[in-house]
Amino acid sequence: MDNQKREFVLKDFSFFILYKVVKFIFSILPKGVAKACLNWLGILVRKFDGMHKHIPKANLDFVFGNKLSNEQKEIIVQNSYKNLAYNLYEFVINSSITVEELSQKVTITNEKYILDAIKDNKSIIFVSAHYGNWELLGKYFSKYKPISVVGRPLNNEYLNNDLKESRALDNCDILDRSGATRGLMKALKNKHNIGLVVDQHTAPTKGGIEVKLFGKKALQTDIPARLALKFDAVILPTFVVLKEFGKYEIKVYPPIEVIKDSTIESLTQAQADAIEKQIIELPDLWMWQHKRFKENYSEIYKKV
Image (cartoon, rainbow, N blue to C red; front, side):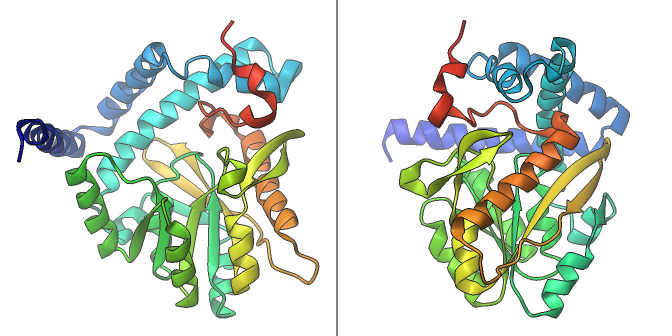
């Protein structure tokens, strides 16, 4: 092993140890203290987020225009950063707890849609957004059936292996984005469920097709629609709403079912409609830091 590679491995391992220390501190820290620290973290991240700092306001101006005041948009932006800080905390805390323990922190609305699909022996394609604490969905939904979810592997090999081992114990398989479609198809063939986060821009070369989101053109992945048509699976939009610090509600929307007239376009648009509905209901919990509309409206992201 050359010196450069040895130094890289040492940095990864050192960060992994730091993660374990932080995880222990979070586990013993009173919730009130943790919440206060995370609120400050959200403020600091926003202040020093040079790369994305202007994007949330640009998105809000584009989507809502004068329907919201600048003061309202300011609150939404800050709450969006605070939600990301809360997600980091929950990611660390929830990584080693059981599904039963996680269920104590979560309530679920419209669970019947999940149970009906299972009763009908249909696989479920859970679709969600970077909204609320989306990370806990895979682990929670593994209580019903084994589930495969798509996620970007962590850059830190030690952290990534730790996470994958934890999820494997929960019947939750994490598929790397590169080549994930094969793993998703295998899961559906085995009558398992799958989960995808579909709210970010997807280039046409990667299966992005045009939808309307807030009345604007946007590109969204067509993978859930294609898989639903191929395997006669039920698409269930699901979102995690923060109720109070450390407590969440999973909202399950009515199923987007494959019917005679279903097309890839209609099924994908239905997913976008569900995402839009949830964001309008409570915009503070969406990750506004993404250039969602860059394909057709790149000019809105130019710094002024």
